[in-house]
Amino acid sequence: MQIVKDEGPITGEQIAEKLNLTRATLRPDLAILTMAGFLDARPRVGYFYVGKTANQLFTEHVRKLKVKDYKSMPVVVTEKLSVYDAICTMFLEDVGTLFVVKDGGRLAGVVSRKDLLKIALGKQDLQAIPVSVVMTRMPNIITCTLEETLYEAASKLMRYQVDALPVVRPMEDGEGLEVVGRITKTTITKAFVELGQESVV
Ligand code: ADP
Image (tube, rainbow, N blue to C red; front, side, top):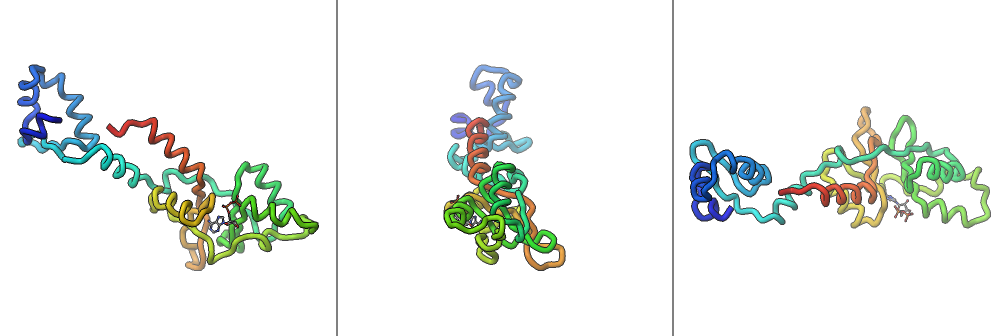
């Protein structure tokens, strides 16, 4: 890197000579440095230093991750489902947030653990109350799209202090949003662990 920084553009052959190595020995190292974005190579010109720090490269890498590659399956219920059944669904599906839909999959609301705990504190018959009574409704739902970056989705989770975002796209008839996935704090934690395992360099 230092040689290229000082003397670039410089050919692989010339770098090898300076290090008393063969071009073949150096080839994998140069390939890694080029792939990682530290160096760039132009045919017949040679290698030159791109001038980005590891930090900049990491940030660029993080901001390329897309919601569509990390989203998980959404757990969706209808508006008429009782609060009692919604609680059972949360346990059975092992999720903390349910997305509520109406007429053919249109996003209508979101129900979280605390929405259900709150209503369960009262003396009402949980089998008789529909989730639509306790859910947060459209248009107050924070969503994300397939093409958005995971970083943007994570920023929304933080900014709006919620645990999950429905991944949505416009319904075919153009009215409302169809739920096609889910991004949760767990999704972000998983991606973070993966980033820690893979080496950018
Ligand atoms: P918990 O209830 O476990 O604290 P959240 O922090 O996700 O879970 O939910 C807090 C409140 O925000 C609840 O009333 C819930 O209905 C609402 N909520 C959850 N997710 C969203 C979202 N994506 N958009 C709008 N409101 C949401």
